[in-house]
Length: 438
Image 1: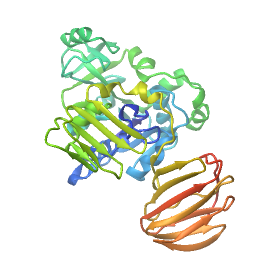
Image 2 (image 1 turned 30 degrees about the horizontal axis):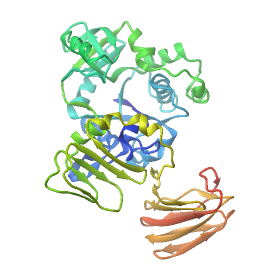
Image 3 (image 1 turned 45 degrees about the horizontal axis):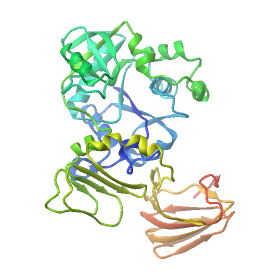
């Protein structure tokens, strides 16, 4: 079975843990196997493989998320990179072209498309197997999954089916309503639109060519930034005549806000946190290496990271997005394919960063024109290359790199570096990459 997982968005509603690089689907706060916390994307991948070990997964995402995906999933998945954010229709068209032209998937094969961020159990993915089977059998050109609502919600779009049968035709779609209209939809047997559907790959390619001017995957990639921003629902689903919906009544929860995220956590605190006995229904997540003490806190969300600190009533936490959009600042933590970095301190002419490299990984061989750098090895062993010369390093060693010096480091064990950048112009753009053979 082929899956296209849509992994976009900046996760601003889960600030300060999420940012433009580390979106909400990469936050390791969900209860995982063997007591280890896992992220949304790790959970979804694990569940897909639990239902169908042969399933092939392609993640459609932006450039800034590729490193985090590789960090958490390694090379287990295919990644279709969007050069720019153009909404779900262009993203799905690009991924479909990628499957055909780069992966050699036949057009008659069924593809399931789903978002990365709902909190679900295994029956959700078992229902996707049925969804794919309906598409392969030609029950309809487009087969949707509709979530049976548990309450009238203003947050979701609705699918109005022709009947209450397990699989039925679709009468119409409705946008996010007000509360009273949502109640009326439920009386009509409406389903939440969770953005999950299946169809044959050839169908996706046909719809792509009807609306977009391109010849193949490489051509569409080059022209991608010029494409119209439009959702798949508006471009295709709401206009399709050969369409049906499968009713899904299992667990399905959108965890796009702190309030709903807290409901999935299996503990009240993560990190260095103390709650006194007067605290009630309060969740605290602390990524800082300093303690947080909460006393008498009721119905609150408290989250702390290098990007900032949130202290909010749980209900009010759903309205965080416009405030976060007004904030500007450098991303202080990000997961990369080779490990992670954390900005520890920023001064007028210096920046201090903790760099963690996973064993067997290295940084790009590069230089900086406008800044000097100093590495202090805090833990581990590895090899540095300075202007072509190799040198073994271990805990306690200090390596200096003046501006213009080509440098990289290879981690033999997990390698932790404290990197100090010095200069009047410290910028992520000040980086020249080179080829290097370690």
